[in-house]
Image 1 (tube, helix red, strand yellow):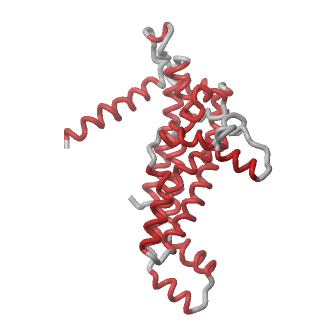
Image 2: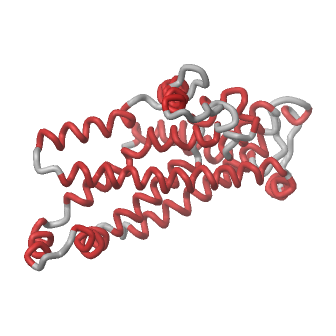
Image 3: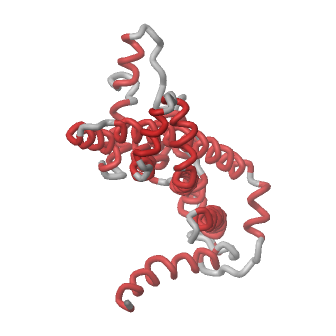
Length: 277
């Protein structure tokens, strides 16, 4: 038990407590406050409402999380319905494998692979638009936020699919057989049987997707690269990173990170409450 706790304390608990402490100091990576720093209480948090870039990051993160949540859930739910509606085990296994391909690709490879799809000149997206006689889009600049959302949806819809496949598979088939006897339509069975019986897994799925997206850093940083500061991919996590490590304002960066951590903690409590833990 103790050997297992040592890595958690060293690599998780200690850095987290340090971040909380640094968020209430004026510590910096460079400049005079890199050596001579002091406790300033909640001044970093009082500064954030006066920072227009912080509010831009909040709005962008909200837009990113909301759009990703809706699209990831819809695609995941649709994929789960396709998989569970198949009566052939071979077809079910094949569909599951195909839907899981984006999910099993390593996280740092996904944005690099996706960049090849949205390349302005040779990417698949613009090739399809040209075939349809539509103007090509600047997916890596003007549409970079939309590209980031579509990357997250493509890479993460299988997470919702896995949860919902488990939920759908737990519904007794007898309910649908009785509904067939009474002549219920597919829509009636879906809204009167399926949705009511999986409402709690759906709520848990939505919370877990939102938790996963609100502190997302890998996709916006790699997709935006050095241009993450162009504010098209400047999510809260990226904003905290640049504040702390590019501009050297480690205390402010930790304050932003603590806000993200508090939101995730509240969502975790809500998740545990819904799950009856």
